[in-house]
Image (tube, rainbow, N blue to C red; front, side, top):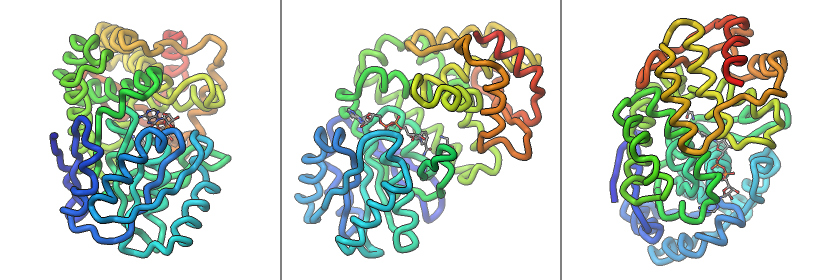
Length: 361
Ligand code: NAD
Ligand code: GLY
């Protein structure tokens, strides 16, 4: 078991990483002094796999947890699911001392965090992430939210969890495609922050893909450390935190233009990271050998690297202009200067973007 801290003053919290440690959650909450009611929010897929163990662990520690399930899928990260969660909490008379446990991937984590941040003006919540994406990214840092029919993640808050409890063993049941998709965010950390980690991902690809215990612990631990460091320095994305969006400007545009059907989030981000590296090259910020390394690593992990030929530039550009990160029509990109360092570039010209997109097909 390994513990990291996200340092945020009186909102600091631990990220506990272990193998086969779901049973320890109840004792940990009890040791932390929690006494109130607990609602476990999950979906039927994850609850069928891990619900009994989590409910049992909480029960053994003296809690009387109850479950609140929402259907499985990104389309249920919605205002109507949120309302059903509030209804469940009110019906069960949860009060201000109660706690929510998010058991699942990023969808469950984001909506549970949002519900926690707004229920009775804010109650505590704990993340128990069960996808790789959630374990290395979405469960850490306190971005919560739901989708609106007019845009993804458009309604949200910053609300930090009290604890992130990661059991890497849950990844054994995760579909391979979901696991690989989460690796895109892992590669992201190497490019934006840490060359040694990038080197490890290159040499250790076979072990990571085989879900080797030590390799997985290293991947998750280092990813969480980097995210924790960035979030501790810039919780509300006044500046630095935006580097976590490397690959996301073009990635989100690809997701939007393909109606969120063709690619998983990480797959679109993978394509976006390679395209952003090409954009760096076009702007003379990075040499081509670095792009080749990024592209090879993305490919080695079985992720897509190319923008599909049928996605037109105008369509992608208009999706980028609708992105939350576009302010007053100014397109912002996170661009690598070398492996381990990126810069935030505002006002990149559409011509340069067009060139980079053509080079990425
Ligand atoms: P997800 O939550 O939809 O999970 C993917 C699928 O895996 C689901 O069908 C789920 O039921 C299933 N699943 C989860 N754990 C499993 C397990 N252990 N075994 C078998 N199946 C399992 O998707 P995700 O990729 O985890 O998260 C995507 C969401 O995260 C998006 O809504 C995105 O906006 C959000 N996100 C948030 C942040 C943040 O900082 N808050 C960052 C990145 C992404
Ligand atoms: N996933 C980006 C962030 O948390 O800021």
